Image 1 (cartoon, rainbow, N blue to C red):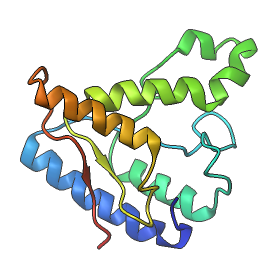
Image 2: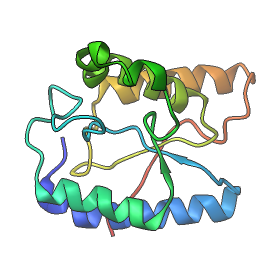
Image 3: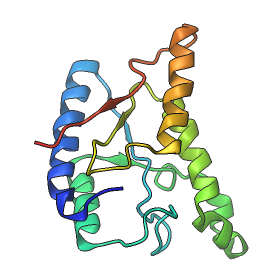
Image 4: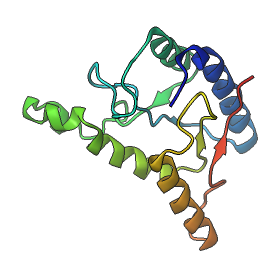
Length: 153
């Protein structure tokens, strides 16, 4: 899990890494898979319970620096989101986790946070890295990496 007081440094490390990757690899789009609540006031993860001003500030800094895409901003399941009877399901972690995983597995480049900025032993991240590793071994994709982690400055 992240250490909230480290988040200002974490976000600066992420920004530095994203700028470098964008320049070196020519990547134009950034997709953020996050437990930060996008549709509700609750986190998307059972391991991320307390949202602080550090979290809000970190997301705000990212959004002010880059055009950040999420499953919500890309219009994922928009017709269902407009129907209130699906709110409970869409505010849970299941659907968001599936969409995030699909995007991350297929993205050109995948990065995850270092210790203090994210969970290092996340099953979510491990599943993505394992699938990306299999795809690069089978040479059936245009993936530029399996997984990298940014550094805290």
